[in-house]
Length: 482
Image 1 (tube, rainbow, N blue to C red):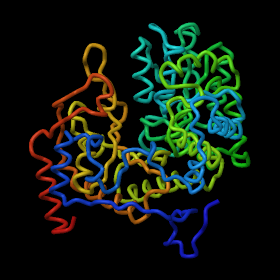
Image 2 (cartoon, rainbow, N blue to C red):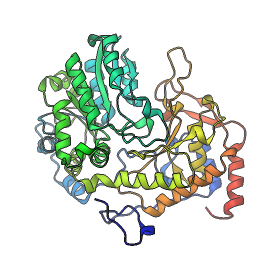
Image 3 (cartoon, one colour):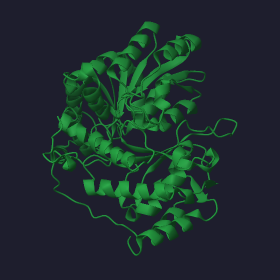
Image 4 (cartoon, rainbow, N blue to C red):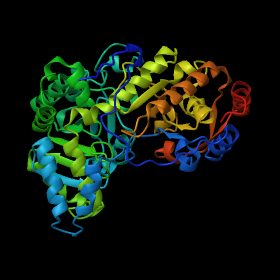
């Protein structure tokens, strides 16, 4: 329940924690930020941490751990096999999800690799509300195809719909029938659709998806990496969930989906990944791939202290005060930006605030990469590092042509319990400045383009000299301020 302030003008999200350890940040002068982004090939992934003021590239593995998580790390059992640490992790999964069958992996994309190895063959299709970059890469690498079936409401940048990540159920039924159940590797629900603004999926829709899968004899999979955000939205936006305990929701989902996997860098605020099922036949199908790709079955490539921290983090993910801080801070930033007139995905979702870059630079063609250009401009203006979630994050078609993104987004992730409200307001202020000077922003072109997951380590350069012009305008407006 939100805490109301007596003076309404003071109303802000109220942190239910105190900060005991701090880490010094750097805010470089604007000229040095220009140098840094150009040396990084206009790829925010290639920036050095020493050159960043607010790191909003992701919430994966960079959330603040609780004191209980740090304490748990001190009792880790580093046995190669039969580790008590793994027993405690299994017990935490049992508490949170109510299932006994669990496999470890070193992170979420490693779990995706195991899932793909077990179920994807050439000619198979994976049906999902929306793809994630690494998920799609693992499936296509093995000769499979990804088919997206998100409801059309999910691609509307601004609306009042509370669950824009929902499947179009009619299209799902039709797709299974057209491809035939034998060709469907699995149906995957991403709880908190990353590439369309962190938009949640309703409990009603998730359960309907599992019903369809069971009726038609296909495997249902839940990517639960962003599930704690999704559960928050279920509790606050979905009538049937209002009086359900968080554990009740977790248990219900685990009882209905055949397979659940997640990154503990997100769900659990630590490191690592997990694959689980209420039916051992599914984990038994995947078990052989864990020693092959990850490590033994009681650590799976994870460092044991991280397993202890993840186990404690899972237990804490049942606490609404624990899981509310991210969505509430994101909603605050989205409201600030919306009040400024900045085009941002609405309603606020999980993971972060998402700038609608197609409206920032409406005349820029897709092949000049609007979202990446806006991200570079924002870094120059602020020292804030976001992540491109547009065409650069797609992969080219087999014939080499570009697959243009449905939405050109710049994601400003909100690591949990990391930033203060003054920093969030600074971010909003600098985004507003970039918006007011958007006519300066020009496009980018490739200088080095990897074939797979190019957004991680590809390099680009500005078209023309618009970045130097942006620095000159910054100095004109801000004087000698950083």
